[in-house]
Length: 175
Ligand SMILES: Cc1cc2nc3c(=O)[nH]c(=O)nc-3n(C[C@H](O)[C@H](O)[C@H](O)COP(=O)(O)O)c2cc1C
Image (cartoon, rainbow, N blue to C red; front, side, top):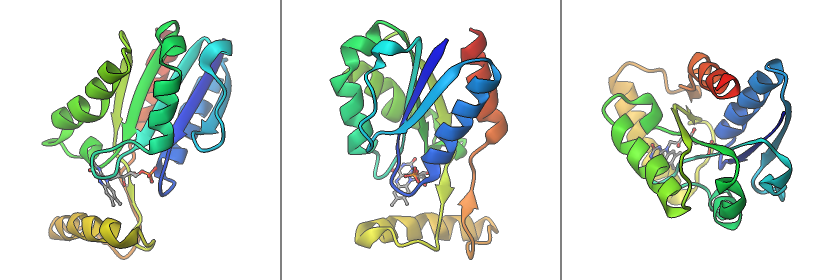
């Protein structure tokens, strides 16, 4: 079985998620290509399973991952497809349901993808990196909230749940 994992990332967090999904599929005997949406990802046509995901900023997927879904929606409809996001909402019990609706259900609907498997994962905040003018303002809001919860924000805050990501991937592989 051949699988393709295409991911959109702004600051690198989602690349790690995509690589872990790829490694997990390989352990389930899949042949896997993991490709950054910026690097001319191949069409889904040659694959049995296609997993497309993105990090989220200001409520949006990256433009390259969005473009990939739009451009390949016909082909994706014809094969097993899963969508995932790695984001703040994925690590916050109160925001999860809204995040699922906004970043997964709505994105699938917009591209006519159904049925499709959804994965909502936590992400990574790297406070040591600059995120641009507006990015830094948004990140500072998250930083303050985390500090109030007692998180040490002098280093990156990684809330990607590898156990969850691997279990989700195995379920797809076995399903
Ligand atoms: C500037 C900025 C804006 C963000 N906006 C959102 C958001 O609107 N919703 C959300 O759930 N997470 C948001 N996040 C969290 C990111 O989705 C999370 O950090 C993710 O790991 C980023 O993935 P990437 O490094 O692959 O781009 C934001 C993070 C930053 C730095």
